[in-house]
Amino acid sequence: MPSITSYDHGAPCWTDLATSEPARAKAFYTKLFGWTYQNNDMGNGQFYSTIQLNGVGAGAIYGQVAEEIEQGISPRWSTYFNVNDVDAAAARVVPAGGTLMMEPFDVMGIGRMVLIFDPTGAVVALWQSIEHFDTRMVNEPGAMTWNELLTRDTDIAAKFYEEVLDWDSHADDMGRMDYTIFHTTQEHPAGGMVHLDESHVGVRPHWMVYFAVSDCDETTMLSAKNGGKVVVPPTDMPAGRFAVLSDPQGAVFGVMAGNGR
Image (tube, rainbow, N blue to C red; front, side):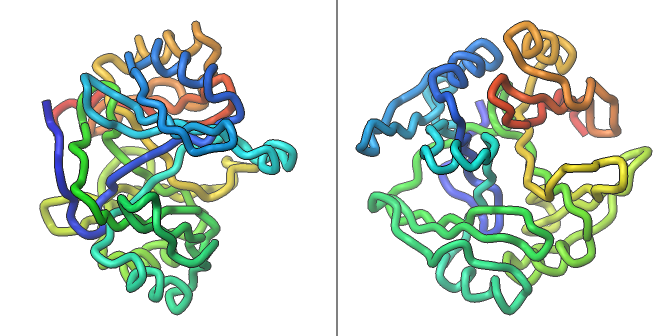
């Protein structure tokens, strides 16, 4: 059961879902991945529900605020990257061409974070753990396994993340598409990057979260049976088989069955 208690600087470390209908979303993902939840009261009737996979934290789900729903802001999965010093990382954002959505802030005494726009318009969170880091599940069926930036300017995006998070990047063979791999070190990938071309009309730059599954086709059918939609059907690539899905509230995510590459 792969799990980790600490993360390298620049590594993906957390994901959460902001959704218009938390109860329905949690029911959907329970059917899809077998998740259970630990509800943490945030006040004003809001809960931050930590995803439990075999008793280990694997992400979270929470309700969007009313203003977001009224403005038509879609439900979304977010990616968090671990940093050694969130204030120092945030200080690099604007000089590198990005935008701070807010100044770094403390989160219930357990960490410190900042939300940023990269220069191409994708939103990402930077996280610094303060208290003991809870064990997290990765790369098991139902757990986060990959994070991928979809953007219209890969050169500008690569330069930004290299400057802010000290990543290295290189092209990788993914068959029919140009693909970039980001690394925190030579041995440890931080995620991937895909170019949004003219076929992706209306798709905003964003970081997408992939969850590991045992069978990509079976998971895709189960999603559709429970109200989800297929954005990209099951597709083979050198690293395995993947699909891109949308939950009943409209949040987009990926599933991936690896082949051990």
